[in-house]
Image (cartoon, rainbow, N blue to C red):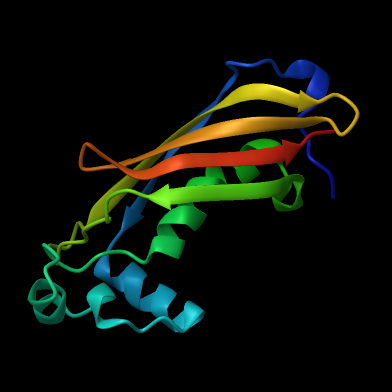
Length: 144
């Protein structure tokens, strides 16, 4: 499968459709099972607070994976992402209130990188509770 977005149709400043990703304690338990990361900061409120966190927090890799979905959905092919990196700036705090947290992700094409390889750099912004949770979130995407 190749990306569905054509390189010729994209310019710097092109905004990708924003998405929101709900995170509940149930989500974290399921992710822990799938990833094998059973660190108690992701499910045990007492432990999380004892180590200085405000509450249970989402796995960093879960947050990172949620954010890149904006890019893979836009490109139409997860394999179109040839490079992806972030810095974790704030944890996604997930209260045990039945609602949890909401990761809100927006993205835009920052630059066309290589006409021959048909690659663009996409900058992402991931927010939760009004705070940026990922910094320097960037992906290089190969387009059709």
